[in-house]
Image (cartoon, rainbow, N blue to C red; front, side, top):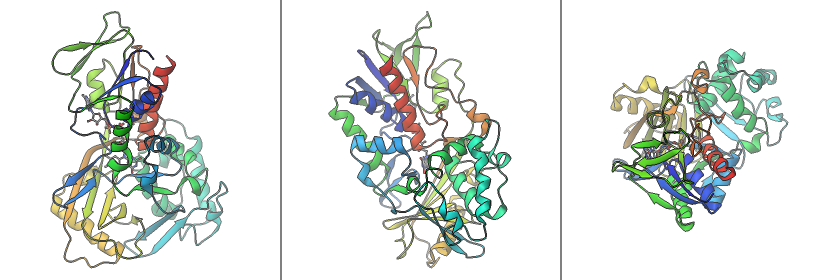
Length: 417
Ligand SMILES: Cc1cc2nc3c(=O)[nH]c(=O)nc-3n(C[C@H](O)[C@H](O)[C@H](O)COP(=O)(O)OP(=O)(O)OC[C@H]3O[C@@H](n4cnc5c(N)ncnc54)[C@H](O)[C@@H]3O)c2cc1C
């Protein structure tokens, strides 16, 4: 590409597009509305906790190939750590039962034949109920597509896919769940090793990407919100970008990668169909050292909490599909979650440690079949405008992997053009 590419939005999709283009020697300018990059995947200093925390606990898996390639490129792969086996600890808060699901490494799922590796109370044949997800059609929800025995559903499938889709499996798209299954459980445990950005999302995904872009000569402009895109009268291209001081014309071979959230994209691009329903995520952080032997993550069954993450000096809880918790008082919710954490981690519940509660109302688009149909591809009817973002038609739910893939695709399409 001879011209300059203006990447709008420095979330992971925009960063991926910018990194990919800059690697290929393309002139890139990255415009971000906020004072910091990272979008929904960012770290910040929290005064209440006196520590740097992430806007939400993010989990990625070894099988997220695009994420691994991205972190390799920007030199931060070593900052993602996790157990060297695909093991997932669970606790049932009602019965106080505890178990660990231990996936076998290879393609053959030996673990389902081992009663110490699979979910207690399930049979190996129960796991075959996942197979229909791999060939589900676009209209089916997970529970339409599969007939999962109740014990397996409650103790593994529900917590796992609620986290993966950020939507309850009763409404979540079976096709998107199948896409995740195909890239994780199907290739085997080696693709399911959990990876956690233990030093924070910023250290793993954002600061090194910005440093990489700087080294490649790309320009990064923070607090540079795009107010309007101007389209040529013949409908062929974007001809100017308005940052608030009037239209700034683009050269004939310049291009735009629009990597903003779907509601912003819909306000900038005429007649764009994009997802318009969202699901919330709640994160609760407690300033307390994890007890000795505490697993890095614990799945919670029969609680309001979904997953407990053990960080250095802090226990953090993630609750997906959390719209029902948006109106509850912060204090009451923080206490309710803390009591569960104390029980799950077998630590005293009083006094309650210093805490913080972060509610992301529009954490992701709703991963339902109806919303999936509203996801546009990367190409638009304007030859120099490409879309990117976790909400574009990646086939995956709204994830780091999907966001990065969408950015790469936009960059590849521009490069080929
Ligand atoms: C709490 C939470 C937990 C999550 N957990 C996980 C997880 O465990 N695993 C996982 O894989 N994914 C997880 N995700 C999803 C993941 O964070 C997102 O899929 C990903 O970060 C989306 O990146 P994006 O670039 O598509 O969008 P965004 O991050 O939304 O980036 C869009 C950017 O555009 C900027 N922008 C907006 N308007 C303008 C404008 N007019 N001009 C210029 N810039 C603009 C925004 O400020 C933002 O920086 C989680 C998300 C949240 C919120």
